[in-house]
Image 1 (cartoon, one colour):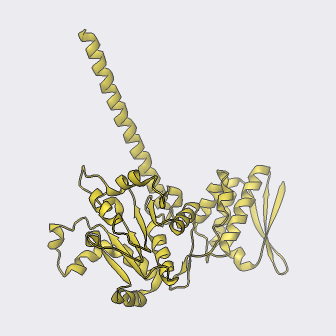
Image 2 (tube, rainbow, N blue to C red):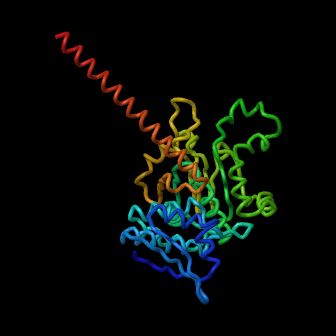
Image 3 (cartoon, rainbow, N blue to C red):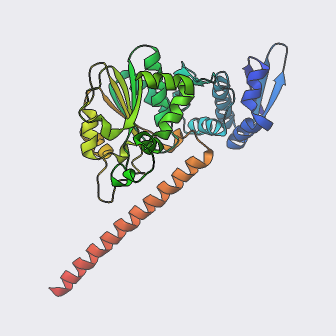
Length: 346
């Protein structure tokens, strides 16, 4: 049996690496068929990985090294993070994990550093830094909105912009909205709650309220963007799959000097009326080759919520793919039937 030793700087990092009841290293052991144990020494710890298969031992040791680096800047390693590293190493993409321990975007009010947790998230953040307009498209739980808000707060703190504007389409913003009790703000609040939550996390409720009162932060329905020119702003359009093509064009043409825009959405969760095209899908097709516009697609691997979210997304994708294949087969069968009937008719 061969062994590989990975040195750890201190016992605190070792504890984070192993996780509660050693759950993290148990996942690595199960994934690669190895045994892992901690060896304590004077001034430093070490993780000893043992295994019969040399390639499995190499992959396990690579996974442990990357998890050790992640433990240096995370208070704890989640099951999702450990599983993500394991999958990347299995697929031979471990080199792409380099840089995930890079600079944090900002610090939350609770002192938690906000950083990209997956390669997809890192590329998304880099796209926002380099481009004026970025489309972030992907399933729920991939951090599309949260990271965009973090980048907006960073830009405001660094004085790159003077205002943050957050907007979403309000699907019910017609007659149905009028029947809701309260003033306009109380009627639109439910649609904008996810944006409030992200801002509270980054800035704290009191600081957010002060900035909102000063007009430095604005949160409003998409319809309120019409007729405006937004200069020196960081603008986020969330849930953009629910914008019509006309609304999307209106929004994109609001951009003024010194501004940056991030548009996020999930094309599999469109709430528009049946038959209505999503402005997000149309914009992605039209603007794919335009300079200074980036389109970033997240996958289920970028999901950082509960592990079940990733499984739910995969199950739905499988179901929808099977449905599409059944419909295609049905169309082909009908075509063959018509051809056969026409042949018999002759």
